[in-house]
Length: 257
Image 1 (cartoon, rainbow, N blue to C red):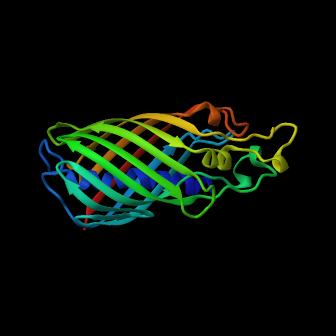
Image 2 (image 1 turned 90 degrees about the vertical axis):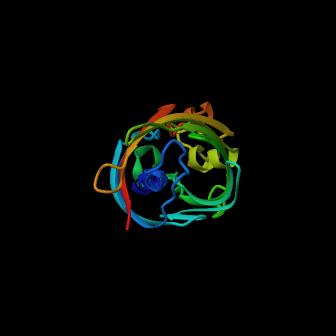
């Protein structure tokens, strides 16, 4: 599961590279030119993680996807835009929940039940003015792993320097108590003298990131992303974790067929 977790995290970065690839030939307005069709990509991700005794993971992964005017499919990510007008966009989304672990992933999980990844179905709404974008998302676990709910808000802005696009971003994400208790809680039957019972409460996590993208290599889009996440105390205080922040670094390349 640890490797799957990193794989889904990488899928997130490559999904972002799809948008960058589709918009790489634009001027100041990112929606001036659209590019549709099948695309492929390859990337590598480095992720610290916050579970105890988890080594930093490095994972290469090839992927394939499809993009049309309203539909984007990339790995397990599905996004369908059903309304666009005057800078506003509304969409339905199917996204993976790339959390979870197997008992064998770390000594801290010895004697615990596995926590499985899931899929979440939800809605997204965004407003874009030029290269400044605001986005709100909300989704719910549809596989009933955690029966949890997530909601997020992000703001980002693209700065163009010739063929190089630099995009800083900031975000907050709310995760309800079901989500936190499933992935970071310790049930009474799992408690040991060195691992106390723990019931997770709802959390609000914060993140900042920056990505650099350019279309100058091999007729595709190359993208480097770095993101630091600060976790709520209810996650940091779990006996399963040993940090309150983590850094994720990703590099990807994608191009249309």
